[in-house]
Image (tube, rainbow, N blue to C red; front, side):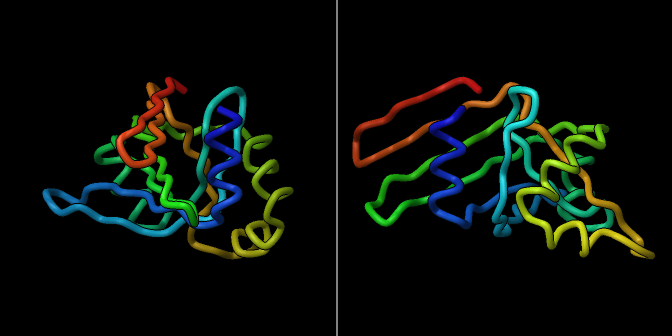
Length: 131
């Protein structure tokens, strides 16, 4: 888990792939945390990405470093209904608390990877981990 988190933090931006019906959708994310042993991401409950994950919780993250090593994390995302998980995101990235406070139509939602597999690849060399 720590290697995956370090890689995502070191490379700042990663991409999350979801599906919208039969159409793939990919968007950049910039923060992932570990919470209770799970890799977690967060988003707004009113965003299309959240609606897509509710309809089909299977997703994949992809990130690449400056040397061409890439990471893929695939699994099922499950909503985490825990205020402490949200607070951990807000501690790491305080502007999220500002973005998702007040009279917004959406709330910040934490999603945890379940049954996740992480694969690092550098050329032909692969390393796989269960998260």
